[in-house]
Amino acid sequence: METQGTLIELRDVVKTYKTGAGSITVLKEITLQVYPGESVSVVGPSGSGKSTLMNMITGIDRPTTGQVLVGGEAVHRLSENGLARWRGRHIGVVFQFFQLLPALTVLENLMLPMDFCHTYRGREREQRAMSLLEQVGIAGQARKLPSALSGGEQQRAAIARAMANDPPLLVADEPTGNLDTATSAQVFALFEALVAQGKTLVLVTHDRNLSARTSRTIHLLDGCIHRDENNGKH
Image 1 (tube, rainbow, N blue to C red):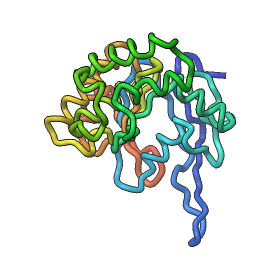
Image 2 (cartoon, rainbow, N blue to C red):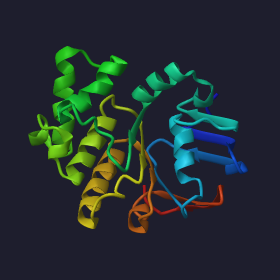
Image 3 (cartoon, helix red, strand yellow):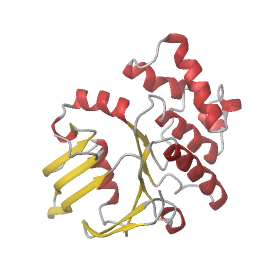
């Protein structure tokens, strides 16, 4: 059962990897709640567990022990097939390196998640994809391959693709890590606009200026939540 009002709940999540040198525990009994409409940044030094935490929320990886609930769904219990379909409908994931399919046009990249999850019919898919590209300001690039776009344009396309199935939750792992300062600010403004529309954002970033613009900052250190700050934003 979902705790009343939470969108994300992690309960005593531990993640241990087996290596040739022995076991490494990357997350240590993480307990965390995120509420609908929040924008939460996750910060911390390299190796503190930021990306592993994101992988728990998105179901890309599973906890060694503990529970992960998103929208009331016990993510850690889903099968691989069930997980892929659940993720396609409920979470939009944005990566540092865009992860657009190079052989498909930008428009086709946006339509693919809709095809996979059967969320929109035929002609509606193209109309929705074009609407999303207009929203992120690159509708004019719809028929181009990703390689013809700048880094900032590719990240805008990736954000639009993450929104294809209208998920309630956006998870972004260093989404501005490959962009210059001005482009980073423009891309982050897109995230802020989506939060203003009611989306929930969880963002890994090394950029303290960006983390200060989210409503909450989670500081990770050595696999533990070192500090959970309210940034005074709503």
